[in-house]
Length: 307
Image (cartoon, rainbow, N blue to C red):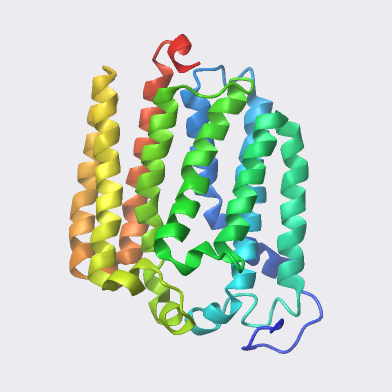
């Protein structure tokens, strides 16, 4: 079925530019751009001397790779969105015919072309992120059909892979050291919980269309506990590592930011469906602030340790 099952507006032959922008979801570009910046900072390299490379990476991770993943997801989720969010560009009919698929393919190719400006590591990282985004949404793989796999792919791509890319590109293609890799992995684990928060708004459509998101698999309460555990334990582990590396001030800051999320998590656990958006809006900024704090902490270590 190529055309969306639900049209709320008169048929169009081509989408408006505003509709294309809505499909690419600029609001979602922030997490990978932020993670890339954290990786660049953690590398210990001069940001001012390589500002052009940083700018290229920010455009690649946000407006290109992330945007293409959003278009891919919306195309292959158009039937689910017709139930959960019929106002979206494709199910509403504002993105007619196969335009959604065409934009997803075009943005994917543009991302790969842009990545050639980032050197070998930048290109390979972009290619891996693209593979994950298509595997997440498109059959026959469709990782999002199982919340454990789908959330892991998104979290790794949005946080860990973007962080590692920022560090490696700034290091001239060298593989980041164990400190940066450890924090990138831990923040990917935490991001798994953040991905779960996004699934609460789509429980009904996911259940009807056979998408086994964590709220569908575990129930609202079980998924809420899972999200809080992933987010909380990962931040505690980051703080422990920072203490171990004698970055005590940064460790205390990460702990404080983590503790500030606990009241939000408590209210979320009591009313998971109603409070998921609230935790996402006010708790996630505290989570990502800890990412930046820890990145600046790593920057203070001997660059030879991070190389």
